[in-house]
Image (cartoon, rainbow, N blue to C red):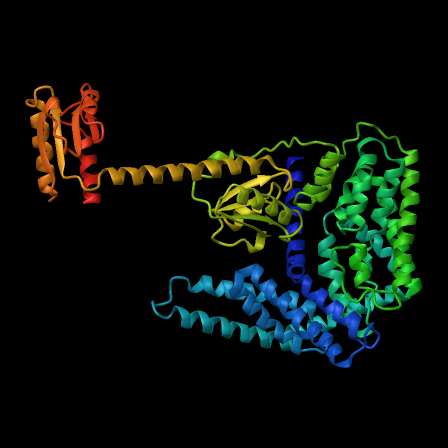
Length: 598
């Protein structure tokens, strides 16, 4: 059983990683896709403000800009900026090989370019003669990028064209056979199992963009992004739910429908898996409605908010798009209502556990978990990680929040800690990114506990702190206290050092004092005088009785039993008390301080 669980866990991590690579190449470039979508919706012949000159931009952006952005990001994920440059260059090969958007080709050539230059650099590591590093680096990247570009043009490009045609033909065949609604059988369960970004941005978007380029729109953009199925389920909970689920559902519905955070309804399905039937039926109904009205979007909406969907809707398609969303909501609501009414519900339903299960499936803390915990007033968070006090043992200059895509809850977590850091007056950079793009100079990496192992593999020498909740973790308070203590200690040390240095500036007369001014104090003075002479310091060392201490003494050295008397005699000078005039370690300490200040 243990081996089976380990195997399932390993498979889950691999799927997560693959999905992360797919979405990681697209999601950082979403703003570019949105820009292209807006220009397309406005200026193509069927757009809101048809204008031929501007419409040319849409064609150039989808054929050149978007694939190059994807190729660069794919290469960068594998091998930072150097991999990104080679990946983007190699992407030009597939772009030139066909007169269609080569997004799939870019998703192949980008990582391939990063992998190739990474392997080359590893092979020659330590073998380049001093002075030739820049020459080798530039020419090796250029040669490899050039060769990959030729390979992409003659080899990869034709293969991708064939694959594109096959996929497009398959999708078209499904559409022609009116079977596209059946795609919900795969899409809705995959969303619950954390693959929504991989499906939307890794599979649907590349095919949909090609369709949108040719037809001005694509229904494929609406398959995963339709908020109707999730909204129907949450509305059913609002009316027929009980306890915590009923209380939290209204807020979840707003976040889901208006904010586009689909994952917030996943725990509600996990709590009653039979509701997946409602999600699938709602999704299929929505797709069927979209097909009946022959509508689509000009680009992928991100996030899947009703606002983003309407922003990507071309002129003349609003009625059909809104009808599809409402139909999906209605069917999902009706089925969910029946399921909730006939199924046994308990007031002890632990929606929080299902939210945490969603987080485990997604490999990061879900916004659903945060929302539900807030609604239930559950402020207490149990965290099973190592002690922050023991972790933060070095100077911290950069703290990075990392998750799969480097957005969403990790970005909000970074914002929360950044505000705390600023209020505490600490000079520490706090930001967020994906695990694949963690900068090498990061001091502290904060990840959800399910992603910490991947982050450690990426940056083994950084301090890693794992949390269960990016938005409400007790680790932030612990970390802040440690960092503030470190700063205060450093300030105190600097102040003490400055005071000590000031006390030992301009020392010209050191006096050893005892009761009679002879005996052991005289021998102590002789020992220190030799040390001063060997160090070449211009300092007078002598001995006397406490009653005869001269007013111009800079440092007075006495036995510890006589120090108070000496201080009473000369309160404004530096006093050093020793236990043994003939063998005190304080003499060497004094000499070091005198050397620094002389």
